[in-house]
Length: 181
Image (cartoon, rainbow, N blue to C red; front, top):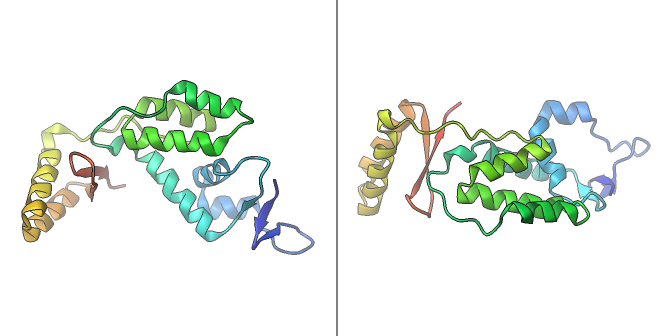
């Protein structure tokens, strides 16, 4: 399909173009890859700052897949991913399966699928147990559940000083740790 800008086909004659160089300089390779994976190749796709911000968030989710603290069974296996691609190269469905694997902490499947598209996924970094960061994050979750927000804030700051960001999540264990870059 055509790449559209402002609900019109991008066209040099109309003057509504964004060059590949401009897009790469602004958004980066991985974001552009995820953006194009989000639409079927025969369907038009709308290029906009909003769409690129969404693709950027998705690319970051894949890049930080290692930060998922727990794993669970996924609704999908590798044959589902392969079937999506065999079905007229249905990349939106394949991307949804990859998101399920990311959320489930299925790092190996996610890395394998991401490599098909050239999207980097770092599955090697783990929270070092010697730093006690995971224990601090768990204590912070307990403090929040008790309503002790001062203690929770103190622990968040301590974790950040050690080079990690803690995110609150609804699934167990109630937090996600992401190394600061």
